[in-house]
Length: 314
Length: 314
Image (cartoon, chains in turn cyan, orange):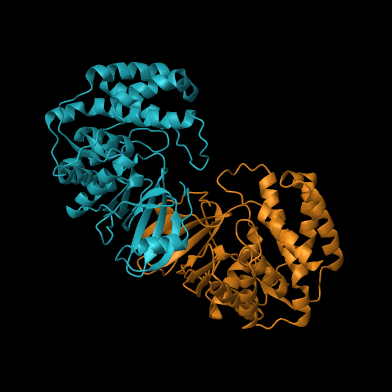
């Protein structure tokens, strides 16, 4: 939730001159994402989201994200298309930051999705997996097992400040995951962060899949496990919601069938998914950050999810 | 710069059902104002700004602001029209806050206005003064002389932490203003905060006068003095910009002629205007505020403006 930098109408007008998108009509800083500054820009021809990338994103990853969004949009997915200037360039610099303008998509993020909405979003995730299979670029998942190990080690006993006993629980879970983490599941482009706030909907229809800044190459079933962790547990406490869980699995498999190995791996992958968000939130929570503009999210609901998956697997 | 509260698509959809404005298509929290939460809401028929009012605004003042905006819009001014529901009600409650939906206006706030833009904005201010003359409601200016006296007293020597000697300078200026403040100038509806960020423009054309939450009944020439203080000094250091000053006076008088008494009072009114923003910024600056989301603005440029006016009057 932030806009870290002001962009004057002069700078914005000059930027738009490089494109065939018409003249500036309106620009509003919008509250979207935590790592970037975003502006809803209207021109005489259309509307766009202009993103200025801040420190949390490695500039070297930007061509991957931009090319992937364009690939998926070309495949007909409701993914915002990066806008290229007259020279075909999508990645620019504004106010000292890397910047990219993308298509504006209609729809709203649903804070408490119904099972029907969950089914539709899971089907869109499967469609993303299929469409991404022909994307030629690779990007490692930097927030997978080695990162969990390193982060849990760095946070150490600090985790007990979030919840007594959490450090030991995370340690035990990690030891188990380190031995059992599957490496032979079908792999390709994954979104890796498809929470309800990254899906735009109108009613039960998915109108946008957004925020590709964690997308990478990893197992499809892990991406589904992230999705289940995000959509099939109560947003506040983290209690499981079986109806949403079933809707998600049905929706996903209506587009892409899971193999028996993928099915069998889901509870373990769920532990990994819950741990990934537990650790990133714990890191934000426990690390004093000069950036007071960011509202840190509570890690506890993901400790509850992790407990659920661990008990479910036992 | 803030959105203090989340409004779910459920709540927003239910709210929109009371209006003839169509169904929800998109909603983005926008970074506008410091006292309110604002959302750019798109429906199947149009676009709107939905404002949820936070603690800095007295709910009892809201009917005045809303009726005034409607009055000015009816008079043909580029002022956002409050949207009334099917029962004719403009003021609602959402998420425990007073809320109002207003018309979306095109245009961008100009960070470094040219003299031509300054002239156009000053002419719009004069038009606002003329159109407001037939508005029947009154609202006292709560940020005038008595407030300056009280605030300077409360801040006391703390002002010297902003700039050595500032407390004494403010004290001396206030004593002078207390003796000399004019009370017999033409009075009516004033905006009281028409800084460049509250004017939307496309090129040299004014497309929106916004943020009426300081508007009140006071002398027109004081409103012009606020305008000059905002537009005719360099935004960073506060050095006077004579070309902008002349453009503003010409623009204003192209629509409403100043009387000789108003002309003569301008340097003194300018002291008051500079002091008003110096003190409110100093208060924000010196008062520890739990609300870390608000970027406080530097008071020093208004100390520089005040010095300019005091020297100019001497």
